[in-house]
Image (cartoon, rainbow over all chains, first blue to last red; front, side, top):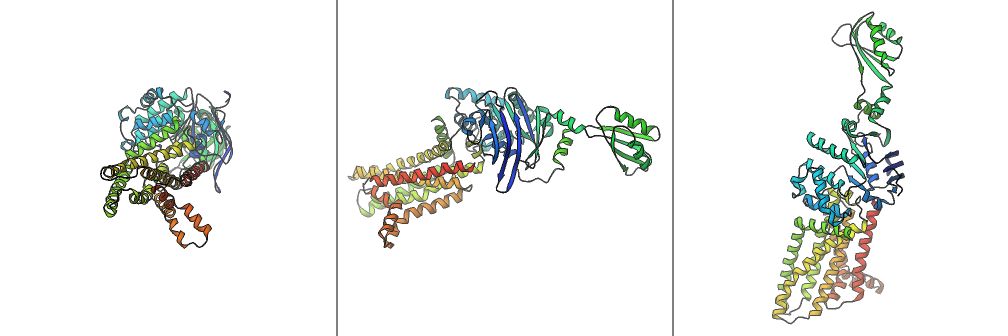
Length: 324
Length: 235
């Protein structure tokens, strides 16, 4: 199709199972050369969204296109452009790794003459050399996960969809897998879901946050950070009467709100939380106002981590539900 | 074609890497050998007619074991998600799997040729009748496999797939026995048309009737089309 089409584009996509809405009105695009992270708690709709992009299931409403192909109707034409690794690696336990990868390569239409080289390439990329002749049921979880990734990389797809690619890997393997994804993402489009927030900051150019089937935000990690800094906070410990501190801080320019808590176990010391405007001068102004009258023990600006950003968007973490 | 072949090779490899294919082939050949000896010594006739009859019922009971895993195992292993997102058309998957299972059926068929050796050594059997019988056997097996494969696509549970297939196949096998109870000619005709056993008995008497060939062909076509339709509808 036209080369101008985004690698992945979702337009107001919804998916309902009976009366249950799993994904609602989700729109975003992923361009070539871009790695986008998909963040959300269990049951948020990540897996269902990825299944729709991979063409495994069709949306109830809206449109999913991959390289311009409508995944509801032209999924067979688009399939050769897509590498998909489902949440649970789709493996045939009784086959050995090389027979399995050979099957996937042939099904993807890799020319017969190129299959051996292609198998070599993905086994090297996923560090599977030691197990190519082993039956899949004998493999450890980490190896199974990487066979699942190797399968997705076969045939050099333009678009890679990875559902929790690093789940179940040990730290060294996570590092290696991230390198594989990062290298692949330089020229192709990658959408990966993850629970691990630092992972998103490390390898993703943009992060999409989804909860209860709705897309809450999509931006670069630093962009999300800036958005949350709008309501940044400063925390201080001070020995002072609560009422007087509240009044004094309320008059400092840039302070929007003040919460005072009595410090447990330390008589007269208060912990004060100020919501402040972004900018550098505020904590200095607070320090001057407080230190002029009372003993200031501690003052720190709370840096929003991706964890905070994530929790801010999705609210308190819910009890683990079944993954959608 | 290479995609169909990919599914076929994968299916056949999985059969031979699991115990099921060996089990079914072994049970079938042992059973057939037993019935063969029994029929020969009982009748003293050097024919395959009685043995073919027994092979038919043995096939109907063993096919569910062969067909139960075709789709149910894919659901169980989560590999359906792979198959349906690879550049494979649903018919590639359905036909590739079917041909894999039919290959096991052909292996069974070839295995029973052992029984023909004493038949030709010590008797004077009618070759054309035997060929007709084998043709009927393979057609019957294909129809049973197609039905079994369809039921395997409907459930995640292999045991359920096998039991439902066995019930349906035995129903189609014995439905001909209802003929004697029917007073209306229409019902008698209908029951006879649907019977797997009655069409099969034509073949083992050396009669290759186009109607019987078309019957088994139609059963395969209907079951496989339903199978393809079901895969498409699941999205």
